[in-house]
Image 1 (cartoon, rainbow, N blue to C red):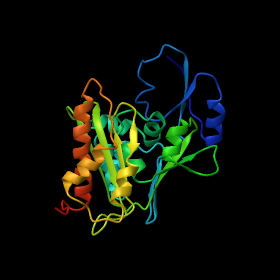
Image 2 (tube, rainbow, N blue to C red):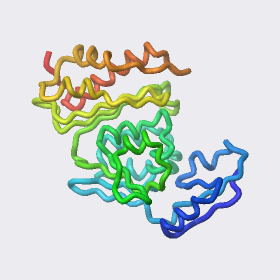
Image 3 (tube, one colour):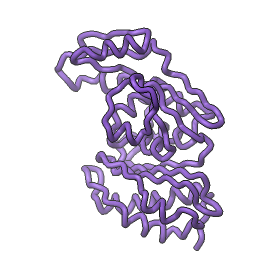
Length: 265
């Protein structure tokens, strides 16, 4: 139950307001505006903090925490894999509400954007920390600080994000994201992330190491090597066996798409 909405005009005001018991930051309000809790709640709106800018550059793309998914989709200089990941939220109404900072802070289990950010090596800037942190560290430490922005190093880096869901509006069952410095003629700087959408987003470091410096192998080899590293959990949408099979397929699909659909046979 929302009892009060504060609208600070500076980051420091927002941080002071957050010290109050029962307070929470409000971006697009996708979840906080929903009647999920009867507990009193003080919302701290971020609308006046100027955190919605998207600043692309050759070596880094910085996306403000209150930038919406629709802004990300529409911006031509945001890395294509991130635009595709944001577009997987099929409802334009939701895309106009959900913010980047809210998605990272909440990290919903079926997020498509977070695996894409991990694959791109994103870094998170937090208000009370001098240095940015990798998104993997942010998620593992369950940081609750005020997110200011997310930076994507090397925005020209090729990337792909793929997902499985029953319908465009259903919760996702699987997400696979990949990026690399290069795929052809040899694999270099590969990052692979697979999410079972039950809370496990796994960096496939074994497969990354096996492929590093090699020509991309045949689909069958990619799938077999991916299989050894995966143990997705079942949910109401899909069995673990189905998820294992489809994740292997998506990993191979992602690599082949980055390679232009070609692999050695």
